[in-house]
Amino acid sequence: MSFLNILRKITPKFVFYFYHLSWAFLSALVYGFPSKKIKVIGITGTDGKTTTAEMIYTILTEAGYKTAIFSSIKIKVGEKEEKNMYKMTMPGRGATQKFLKRAVKEKCQYAIVEVTSEGIVQHRHRFIDFEAVVLTNLNKEHLERHGGFENYRNAKLELFRATKENHIINIDDKNAEFFLNIFSKRKWLYGIDGSNLLFDFNNIAKEVLVAQNIEFFEDSTTFFVKNKKIKLNLLGKFNVYNALAAIGAALSQGISLDICASALAKVKNVSGRMEIVSKKPLVFVDYAHTPNALTNVYETVNNFKKGDSKLICVLGAAGGGRDKWKRKELGRIADNYCDFAILTNEDPYDENPEDILNEIETGFLKISENGKPARKSQKYEKILDRKEAIKKAINFAKPDDIICITGKGREPLMCIANDKKIKWDDREIVEEFLKAL
Image 1 (spheres, rainbow, N blue to C red):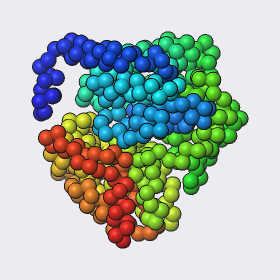
Image 2: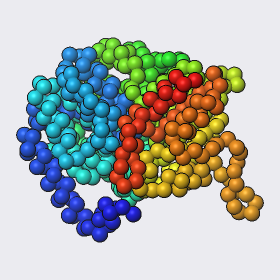
Image 3: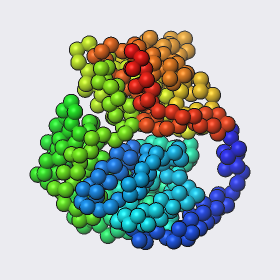
Image 4: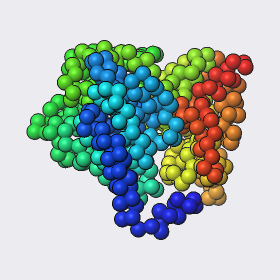
């Protein structure tokens, strides 16, 4: 157990509460409470935050607004863009307030930020006046950190309680009603299946957006919202949800559906999110690291299989005590969808990487008659070195096969023991091996 985890266990909660709250207040004070001078849109949820943030950014820019963005992959203010090197989606110690101050100085009218449950627990969202907040979806995640799913959900709810203006909510999510019960001046609801429209939202909803006539193609997705055709150069049903969330956020700011459609058609890809790195063989790199996200990715890429082509998957799971419960589930999902899987290192932190792989492996195992776990098949392999795992996948693949590498996306660092970080990029490694071939 790390020193930080030990400290968390022995320190009274109220000490941490006032510690983080004090940092949030002092940071806002030092930077002059910048959110009062700019409109801030926050995106929270388990999956889809980064893609939704990119879509909102594109729409606002298309509408003529100068916009800044702080996402898990990049920080952009004005013309200056840099990678998010914090290894955190929503860093603390004033980073967000500093970003907002920069955005105000550059005369941006909007700022977009991803808001995490950890950030909320540590009050990083406090003293930020949000113009609108978006809920993408809610699934099991960070359960050890929060002490259960209910606490995780309650953390997300705090962001909505702190925002009185616009709430944009995925009504297809099974936790939607918890967010609908929180007051806001306007609510913008979105979904696909429309089943929740059986409920009367007239008293609380400014707008209900439902995607209809969805069609999936090899390189795009189309659907209609209020008789307006939306084309995405992105794949998967989950990106329809992301687009609807972005449209809801845009409509809440008085931006027309025509501008939304024009902007979304310009989103070519979101780096590290269902990113195609090669076409022969077809290689996808994606950030998926939760069971829900991994399922969505595998379901989408399986649609590209033709004839005898196979889906070859490279996956791992984060260490540091992060959501150990999901490791077996990730293995089970890979066993269900992949023709061949390579289990490998991801971000082990101070955990033994081999132990993490062994826990993922349990998702591939069955219990034999003598009560001991046994392999279901020879459809997976464990290669601890992530670079070697990617190399094996590329060498193993035939021209028509599909390789799907998940867990890190375009993250520029890998976190290993003793708080060390090493430079990393799955995409660059794929390109390096493909050039060698």
